[in-house]
Image (cartoon, rainbow, N blue to C red; front, side, top):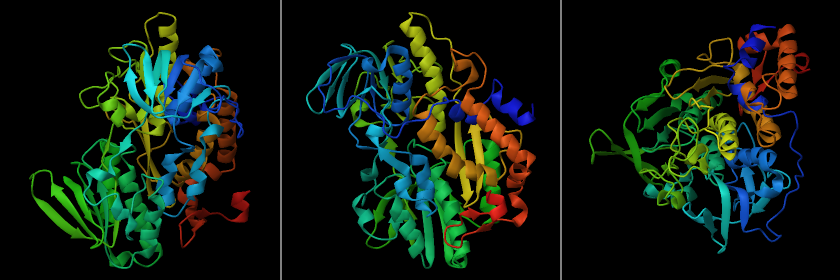
Length: 496
């Protein structure tokens, strides 16, 4: 067995274990479930709040545990989005339409979809209330309500998005405005921001900066662009290995990074942005822009902030190793809405779901949870239209890398994984059967699933043809990039 197979299928397998060990079955695009049009029950053994990646994944797992008829998801949205691809949508490399599907098609078959919004949690009485006046009781509650975008905390937003030259990759309503602003750029400051709050996908605010710089180079506008990253943080990235690599890119591409600068106002009619110096509260700076990408402040959803399940900061207060609530033993949390001290990413949700599945199964048996989540998360740092630094790390900001090569380097293979492979795995595997780590497979022990084994066989065939190896070397110049988007294309022989 090759080093790659040994590495990825071993006990420390990470990224592909998180996504490819999600099961051999693929999601049917016409999932059948008990819809909101039928009379919903007032009690479920497992009630899931939220129909994002964490909620859908856990509903699929709980369906296997207790049966579909005993599981319900409370989610008001008609469409489900794969949000990690929005970085590429904002840079013109992907279409927005590819990122979303009807919610009805991703809810596990047979699971009840309660099309409503949660307005109150009452864990002392094991029930929740919805905006249509319903009270729903449960035996076990999984909270997966995600994170809230607070554009309104920046003066001048969200109404400022009605003006040109400004966009944000964090909302389906504004991500295409980023691409329009990028195309319309003529000369001046291109400013990218990072707020003074926790956010989801903390690498995304700078990913669009690197993509924009690449676009300016490809379109002959780079000499006219002053590219500025104004971040409220004190470092470019929280893990030293990847921070060092990013700092080298910043130096080589002549990018300006200003630390401890927080966006507090946008004057879109004047194309001005106002920043506060966090080291000197009250001191502000007005900067003109030709393009502005806004990463909004974010917070726990309002319904959680004042609920009994929240900690002092408003996040679902769970044990960082088991994901069980610290006060209510039949309540659990997953993903962006929790107090877990790790980066809020889809990869983190994938890893957490395996641990949470084991935790709940043992709680159901009145046993003590044993599996421990180590904070694993992943951030594919897109540094161009054909390059990614794949950051993977734990609670202690220590790298937990999947592949037998240095992931601190920019690689075409990692870009292709981010842009093309991960969406396929998300839609067809993560949201369906969700088997994660070898040790999480309760039925089959440590043997790889069929899907994972098939992937490894495919990868090995590519390596034997020297294709996979050449990808990591940048294909020695044999690929060209489209002048508009920078998408990578190969010769006919390479594409076969």
